[in-house]
Length: 296
Image 1 (cartoon, rainbow, N blue to C red):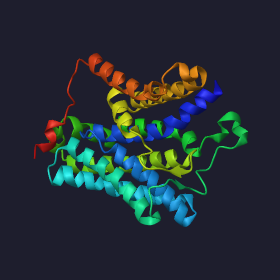
Image 2: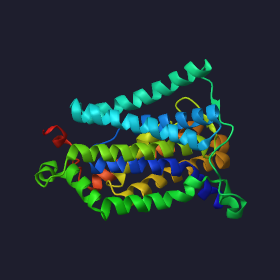
Image 3: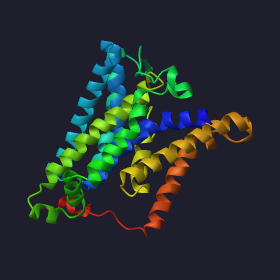
């Protein structure tokens, strides 16, 4: 049982961090389809930073800076150039996937995987079977709680929700929706960097092309499944991770009796089913605030 929980936390921790970034963006009125691009940017920058400097802190810092710049670029394209947020987000994802591949080829001359000499600090043997997890896995529940407090119990969170749902009303009381969206995207950029670093340095200590494998889109689906609530979206992300862990366990149990590709596809099937169920439960209601991004 402990092995399953460890597997869920290993795959779920980076997913939760990126999901919280999507929740922040959704609360501000932006459906963030650039999560995949920011996540892989964070993973690549963290590993390359550690390889070149030997410092995990420097690698994580570089990842945060690049993801914040990517988030700011998305804000400029959406708010200043009036681009469609969905298309802009997909463009950011393409930039992240292509940019990381280009960076590795430019520095090392090939598309080969990049191994990191060190990874994130682990919890250690005093935590028993959970000692193989990184410190970011231990901090993850605290970050989720902090996100809930920020979004549900602070003036910032109330203003952010107002900007996402009723930007006209927010402006009428002196709140700048554009500035609030920038703040949400920047905070999300930090979370995406942390999620990408956890994916690349938490257990694998490696970066490979397209290693996120759609996890950013799974995080986006978790935001929808969790109705934009930090706790609900976190639960959805961990549910997708649990399905992935069970799929890996099933490969060991069933072997060749069940098609390998089907087991690998289980998390993505669960994602599609989860989004469908979420839409049915809410009666297919459209996202509020989305059409109002072009209102001024």
